[in-house]
Length: 115
Length: 109
Image (cartoon, rainbow over all chains, first blue to last red; front, side, top):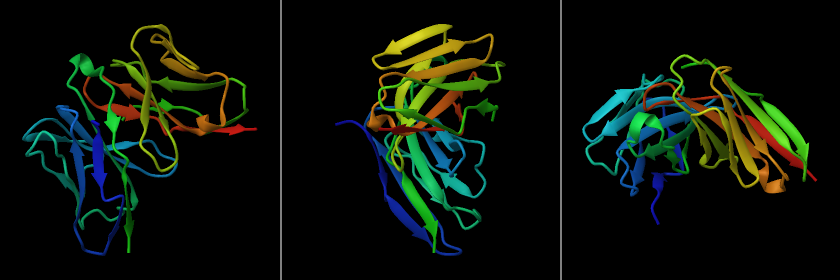
């Protein structure tokens, strides 16, 4: 079945450590997104990519980095510069429909915690 | 992001109807999505509105008034499995979505 796979489901980070969250999709979608979800807050956009080898910062990109070397993959690295990384991270993808009218499809998320 | 407001919590009885309101800034509006999210799970797409009026999908309906910057999601014949968070998300003239904080709906027997 087509879908979006995020791994790992749970991740723990030590102080000063970089960690990478995986996101793979087999929906043949051009656009991919990374969101952060904190309790009581809406999803906040970290980075997004509309096409391979191109990506843009979202609203809260500081302390994060991404790459888009393949259409299917959009990994997110949480760097040591991100001082409050504990959150639920969601990856999403969508077709590049006209005027952004295509719904985004989400992965099951990765829950990141500080050790 | 743009201000998208929705109530934090709502409680209703099984079999009843609940209406979740969402208001947003009208400038640059280009479409509104509703998602359902069970605790610890991925959001799933429920509905999309870009023109004024009501979109009906089984027990769920969504309404939009572009001039008022207002939408609602109507859940009819509530079931226990409808207990979840409902997210309002707006597209403002680009490929990004701005999300509200979500409304947690609790269905009681």
